[in-house]
Length: 520
Image 1: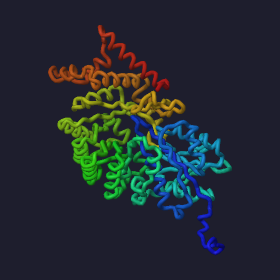
Image 2: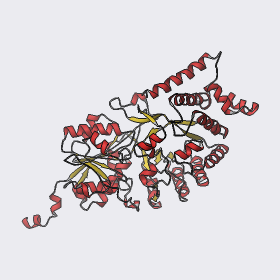
Image 3: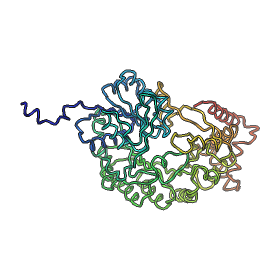
Image 4: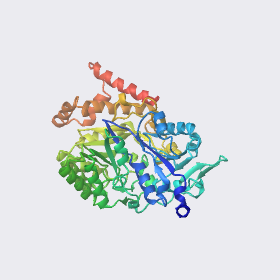
């Protein structure tokens, strides 16, 4: 027996490192997202750790829940990885803080887009966070696990921390994973099987990557900056197996996380494969993608395949602005507006429903230019929906840089986030998420921002909610009155003997002012 014991691998006798994973997403309509980001961490660590038997993963926390219950679920962990973004930053921080209070020796690592690249202020405001990880998380998470025993953070790439003497350290990011197929699929390796088994009544939404990276650098977005532009591809065979997995697991809704689906010629084949899987096996019911920019023909073909097979519920035309000065300021002047307009015309012709994104509060935009943009989009055939999004600041987007904000006179307030896909009755009343909302710029001062916000709501109600859409279209087609002039009557006109319309518009303006004062 002594001889047998001496021949055993000593590492087996070492304590197992118990790892907690937290990726909280909003749930709606009885559905929750599979925790894809932390699933990737688990699959990468499990596959590449030299002694995988020395780590054990707890069931991940994947949805909003009572903070004390979350702390209890993580109580056995030695180290916990939090994947954070704007929709979960506050509840993640509260869980981490209370976990540290209850278990002072637990290690806490924060990653994801909400961790600022300039992390010193963040770490000093969140002293319970041991490490902030920047950029891609898979290799970084493995490096943290391998270094955990000795706490040799100085040897790691892409981390920030404050040492025992109170000194801040920031280690430069390492290289991206060029062969991203080195990250095993959390779907195909069974990573999600245990959490699905533990929640048998849960309906799941899948997050799906077919590639990673974004060649564009829109200043309001942290996608291009965080992925450093170049696009890397997951293998086509792997993706087809994952599509089959969605059907096997009866996943209704798949949200594709690619920044520009359709940017690669093979994306047509991927869309067609998912369509074929749905036709033969019934799932998935829907595949939501973000269209590529400047690839009109492929974007059209991809969305036509999805539409013809009932996989999309509406195509996003993500224009954001039609003003040339604004597009230059936000680094979208290399993206063709004509491409978006052609897509909208073709989809309208083919009876494929679309909606157009415009962002309120972008630098360079004025009250008049935004109104012109609305009229232009409607003149081009958009009668389904313009989604008027408020601009908010993400920490690692160029717009979050203090110098950029000073240059363009950007003013922000902290505002509650309302989950527009959920129900207020289902909201977590314990922790409310916050956003840094733009409420004025040098070209859209406070009063003009409120006027623009009210005008958008009025247009949405009268035209897109169909209250007056038929009379508006008839006035345009039969009397040749421009849409801009008609909409101005609702947004700015003297209502005279129409007190109800005036009351509605006054309500919208008052709500816009309330937002500027911190209202949700």
